[in-house]
Image (cartoon, rainbow, N blue to C red):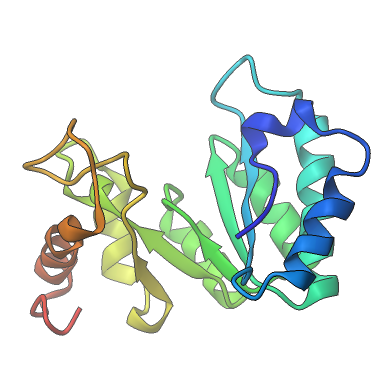
Length: 181
């Protein structure tokens, strides 16, 4: 996946998106635009309007190229959904942290919901509710490696070998087996 992460939105230079578009069309291994989106958590990130502008242009690029997106949304649920409703891309909301209502709106648009190690955390308040409601055909299990390792490995380096713990937690909440998940 190729894109400009929202934490680097303030560093975009003239021609960067043209270069990304060229690589997305030229490279066989390029299959998505991402990780793109909005991150309002860190004060040192670019202003919100700068992030929304870049996000919108990258969503438009994904539509032009017919490629899915990998969406980063941190503390920016309203603006993220507004952009997704406008552009209606295919793709995944990575490390989903929104509400059940947001999940329902996103899945209506055809988006996937990415869930990882956070679902195993004791303080994960929204995740169990989202898991209970998300359709299995719209659920993706992910790592966010090297971050957000599931319990009992929380705080350590995450990798794909730990996704079974996420599957087990989802299975527990949904009343399924880990193999079904």
